[in-house]
Every structure is written in C-alpha cells, then in structure tokens.
View (cartoon, rainbow, N blue to C red):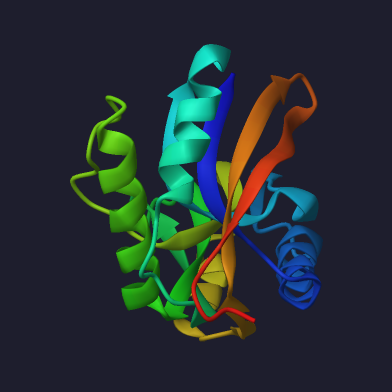
Length: 185
C-alpha cells in the first residue's frame, strides 16, 4: 500500500483554494491537472509503497510522537516548482507556522527512521494545487505569483496517516488513522 503522513485542511480553507483554482481555470492560464479539493493536504512525509504487514509498526511509531504542541498555520501566496518562470507544480505557500510544521515533520522523521524510512534532507512546506502540463498565459500567471492572496489560517491539532490508491481518474485517499497533538483541544 502507498502511504503518506499529512495535515488535513479545514473546509473553509478548501473553499478559498477552490476559488483560486476556478479563477486559474476560467482565465485559461495553464493546462494542468488540478488537485481535487477532497485531496488537498500538506504532506509531512511520503512513505511510498509499504507492506501491509508493517502498518501496525508505522502506526505505533507515530503514536509515540510526544511533546509536539498544536500550532497555527496561515496559507498565503502562490508559488511554482521548480521555478515561477517554468512551473511544473503550482503550490500555495505556508506563510506562518513553518516552525510548527518543521518540528512535527522532524518528530515523524525520527520516529519512522527506526523502521528503515530515510531521514528527509530538506523539507519545503507547501500545498500543491495543480500539476502543470503547459503554461498558456505566462504573464497573467505571473500576476498570481506577485499578488499575495491570503487563503486563511487554522489550528493544526492533529496529523494523519493516509493511504493513496492510484486510479485512472486520479488518487483516492483513505485516512488510516489520525494522531492528536498536545494541548490541541
């Protein structure tokens, strides 16, 4: 099974992201595969293909994460990988809360390392909204990069282990388990 660990988004944030996606689509700025709203998340660690026999060990390792308090993040601005000039991925920036995400990601990384998962060398917190096939209106798309759009803020009180099943119509995600953070409600 294909697994990853992520922070899920509240409905209000998804609604704001939907408006952005619809604007990009309606202005025909890019030819792209847009991430479905129900699949929006901030990835903390991609585990890849994992034997089902290891699932209980992974859940146990994630349950052992202690000392990480809930935190607040804010999403604002649009970016592109590998660059804004030639984007292949459109993403929303994590404008505030990177320290909290970094601490949580590091704890996840350390707890899963004992199961043979590699430590991440770098982590760039972001929220992917589209995978670009080609840019149609580069100048117009650039305006989105330089006008900071606020998508809202929310409290991160938990993270989730998620199973991803790839299908011809796109990935299907299923929550395996959620893990609460300290003092988070």
